[in-house]
Image 1 (tube, rainbow, N blue to C red):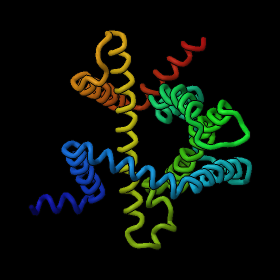
Image 2: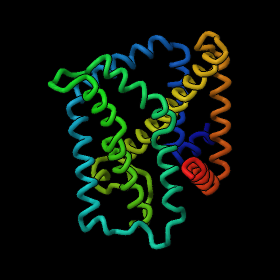
Image 3: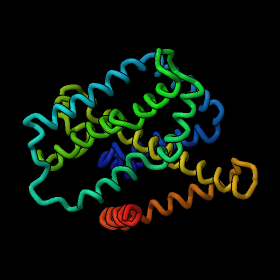
Length: 259
């Protein structure tokens, strides 16, 4: 017990986040239907309460980044050394990590769903509304949310030479006790949730394609589990190989596709 306490005291954020994720995974495994109902109720509540705020926040993030880009702050250089990767490599990485498997499905499914189920009634046609909502979900607004966090981390790492944890990269958060630690914990949890959603979405796409080609029933559990292990194994190899091999390989594939 003493050794566990000492390990926790050295890195409490890691063990606290790991413990929450572990018990949450057990809860979801044993009470799947109940957790699904909680997610559905919670998502509806969040959309009704914060839907308008989310729209305005996205617009403000886009305008804020435009201001940063064209103001004197946009001239601040992130680091003193030349770029380690070329522009094409970074573009390949951004689309692979930022969009992932989501855009392969949502780019087609979302506009069709919005066309058949218009979320609002305006003078615009259903086609226009569907494309507007899809562009909002995957256009400048989504990238602005990514850009805000990337800017904070990059500025802390390359300019201030400080810790890149999101909670400690903003000195203003330190004025409130435990707020930086809470932000760091929330960042870890939401990152894991996002990865789980991406893997789950990609797995169901692959499994659906396999079931369609083999004319079998979609949603076979053992196929889904096998695909999850394969995807995680490939992702582990990619991470273990390092960012240089991953980025260079992605850029090479993009060059082959276009040229």
